[in-house]
Length: 356
Picture (tube, one colour):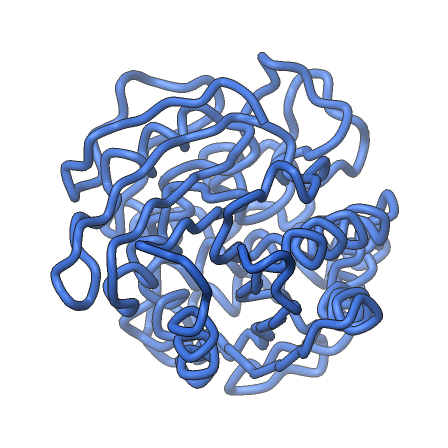
């Protein structure tokens, strides 16, 4: 983890500093308009940089390997690699993410943090922080001074995260932040020395088994708990239902497992990895529940979900195009609800050396 930057907080996500190649700025209104005007777009065509926000689904980029998912690319990445998540996508999902996270895991976490020896404040490492939504959700729910260390490969997202971080904890204590650009797949216990907590959101499912083992070893080796939220569970419910729902979902899940990534298997693998290293693990469901108020996010999610399924199974293309158009029409009319199942994981590692 290198390139550490300490930044003052403004509490607001800033405007983009400039245009980005292949990324069209999107807000709720423009996303809904895009959904309304492009329902006939091909579900499998990766020409849709203007209709699929990077992060929502497959988006073709120069130099990308065929079928590569738009993730943070935690491996084989150079310092100038194109970012894999657009701030617009992360902003669209922040509200549903916050509503979905399992608040039930916070009480056992607070008890552990309150009993940490010799701590004047909390040091929290947020892995793959994106625009910092985890900090904005969690910091105001924890008491005491907090110092957040934000990790991401993308300096552009780190900029967003740092300037939009919260200023105060639940009891009014000060919250400070620093950023570190680096590969979260290469964590070591030394990198987490002095950490009170490790957090991540929507990260586990884009890791390999080896990377999850590395993460679990680093957290348990440092003796700090980990709160890892919003890992995809591989189950989706659309109302009204359609005969193609299950086929699209199965193809999407297989797409999630490409290139050795764990996708919907990640939460089970992570629970086992932490348990094998002596941590007490708690799991709790954390589903997105998307209705008419979430039409912009639902439309983007649909395009990415169906697009990934078609990329995995090209034979679905013709049927999927009709399916997507019908689903987008229902979304625009406020007649579609979607439940996207996720799981949250709390791993309470055994403190080591009195300095968890």
